[in-house]
Length: 286
Image 1: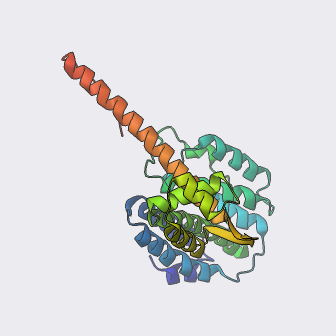
Image 2: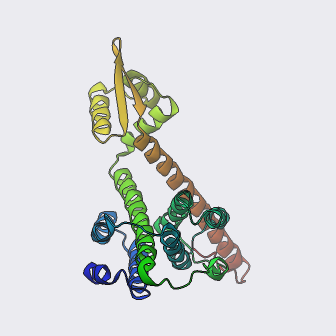
Image 3: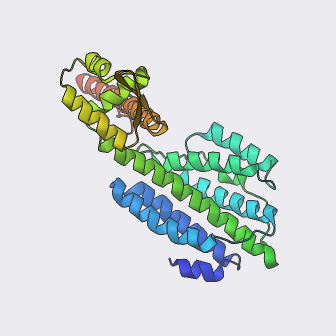
């Protein structure tokens, strides 16, 4: 798949559309198969940067065809990503259909793409056999003439936003993986008690090494996860928006791990009981 090929043909439909759909499938497959988050960020960057350059500065003559292209791409992306949050997705799709020929459709677009990105990013993504994309299929005719360019740029923009969402999620994962246990505890303390001093953090964590705490706070501040200000003799610490995002992700990971462990324990218990009674008991699917 070459971007020069797409760039040469982006005014031709359905040829350009087929190229974008193929790129979408590559992005989905990469997101599901690459376990090295750093490698995944680089792979998505490789796709996203040339695509952004290809559509940068293009004027849109027909906004309705631009959004029609986005919607056609969304239907395809939803069909292969199999998102899990179906209720929220349906709400966004209704919002999209109510304003598909106006700039307000962007809000719904970002909501849908965020759900797609979360679904692709989750390690526990499950195929939804009951998901029928046909019920949301756009009644979009093949565009012709000068408006075909706007239709295809709309599809490309949708894919680009998905790539950007996935990169952000992967970068959050990388940040979390590089945090030590003590750094996570410090972030949790600040989240529980905004405007906290290093002395109060040490007391909460039952620690007494002031130099170590100073080093940790300096490191977290360099990564833009905390900020501070001086008031009198004290430095007061708060989480940045990025810090709150990291804490939220950590809590979600912990909840997911707890749920998975409970399911695993339940499945193991069923197997154990079955063996005791010389009967069959199928374990729950992972």
